[in-house]
Image 1: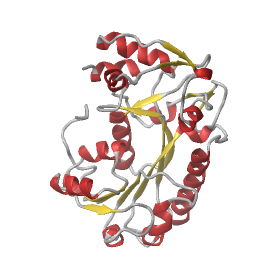
Image 2 (image 1 turned 120 degrees about the horizontal axis):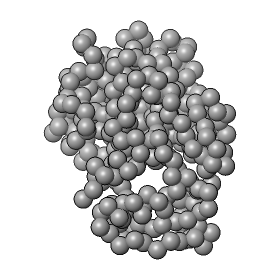
Image 3 (image 1 turned 90 degrees about the vertical axis):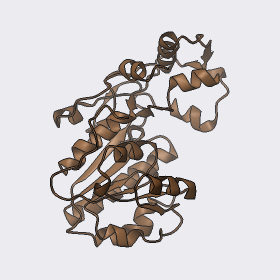
Image 4 (image 1 turned 60 degrees about the vertical axis):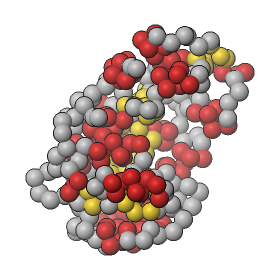
Length: 297
């Protein structure tokens, strides 16, 4: 469970949160909320929909190819909206299929949250970037994210609704971490000289969302840890504290990688998080050391 305290309302007045894409990160946020604060969540999977229903949530099926049945009616009663669905070549699927309903929610709608990625910054040769840095995405998926951010900004600014865009770094947490890779034998110490990545524990994504949603914050923030580090160092740390054999180093140039995996290494930057801290957020896990330490098997 999250390090945060027990479930409680986002604020003292009634809140109705609707979540598009209740996956790994968004679900962690929802788990820390009182059920009466959540008006609905979407998933692609009928099995997950049944699981959400058993947990006291109201699930809707939405796969991005067409409008989801019953979603527009639920949006009419929504005060807080969270989008955690990746865009595609045709743009943002939420805006494409439910944009008109979202625009008609005003003035009931008080806040929008959008989960994006630090990939929008592109490659900066290992230099530091922050929210004022020029966006120069490299991959197609990152270019689509830049366009989706712009579309949500236009909607929010056009209707005067606060929008929080959370640019997330590499996500890890329970069930998704270096220990799992070591246990399965899939961990590799992939070495590309000078390459670093930031990371973020899923509980800090949930914590940041809680702060931003409770305050109806209008901001673009990097949600990322304090210590960008070479990926091989993270694997070595996990192996040491978890009692695993240290995997051998693998040279990046000769490594057998999928095109998507290789593309991640085409972007090298160090991401600052001072803006989020200036809003009063205190990280549960400031670096991968604290985060992995809490996940140690």
